[in-house]
Image (cartoon, rainbow, N blue to C red; front, side, top):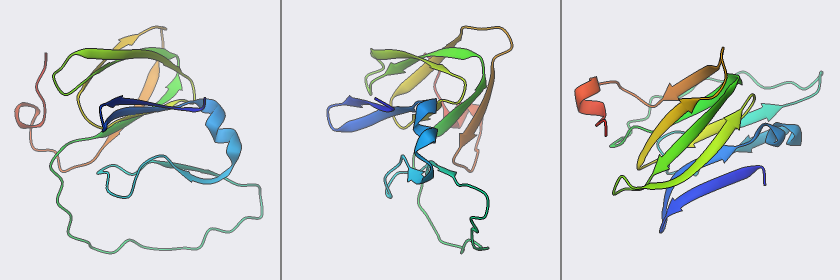
Length: 135
């Protein structure tokens, strides 16, 4: 399966989009419209034109930080925790994989030297103390 979803009842905790998912080509989104972080991939052959555009100012209410990781190089193991902060799943992610962390908790183990990860979160950033709790 190219997209794995971890849930706690009806609550989506995380999605793991494997590198093979990129082979689909075209535009593919892995988030629902109502989620705070929107994650998609696109891939086209030469000659495809994507029309220029801008984004409108739209007031939004965001009450939780969600994040997306793109594994550029190496491997990591993700630990996914439910809303009670109980470990519910572990998975390994490697080069080209995407991890979308929605709710609950998460932690990581670096499995290879030289691992590089791009992390993207919704903002705005308030502070380490206000934005997270370590456990």
